[in-house]
Image 1 (cartoon, helix red, strand yellow):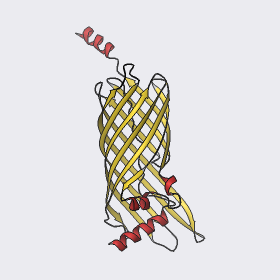
Image 2 (spheres, one colour):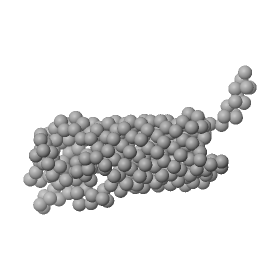
Image 3 (cartoon, helix red, strand yellow):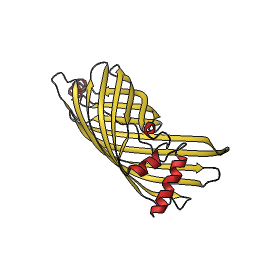
Image 4 (cartoon, one colour):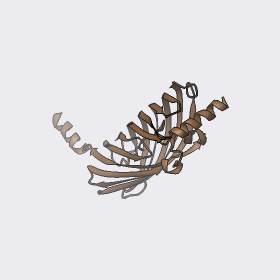
Length: 262
């Protein structure tokens, strides 16, 4: 078993310059500050995460919010090895949902604390093709459980937040054309300190998100599965751009409409 795992990691490291098996999604930092408020975003992952990310959050009342996220990632690559052409493919899909708590920390309602948690499920489909080596097809499913405390500042024109997401991931039921991969299980724990900055109006803002993914459990296998062997540290740096929209229900108008209707 140890020999097979060692061979697996060795092969993955060889392939990792072109394709990985897993990428984290954009962190959903809701930054809710009013009752019955919806905040949605669309982000493009430029480094260290999946490419297309869509997120939403809704405040049930002045302290409780619910969240949801989906991610789509697809990459095809070509690379050279011993003057020959190799191919790589990585498709990944992920969705999660959760709930949490937020609370203002000052009378001006500018500084807030938030803490969210939830679970997700993902799927990864890969193909490694190397000259004079194994041509391996691999697909797997993974589950995640996460906890995410954070602090944020918000006003009329911008908001900034710092979140620390801890994610426990179970990558299981690997189905592969190679016996080195087939039916293997992996368990990872990561910490992702992340900064998100949004700038614009109350209803529409553009955002920048950057951070880092730190593997805390089974680091050797995590590096082998998810990073570029020649740029291990750089592979874990996250960077994304996108936009955010905000809608807040006007409770006063709703109450007036109900009185008129009655």
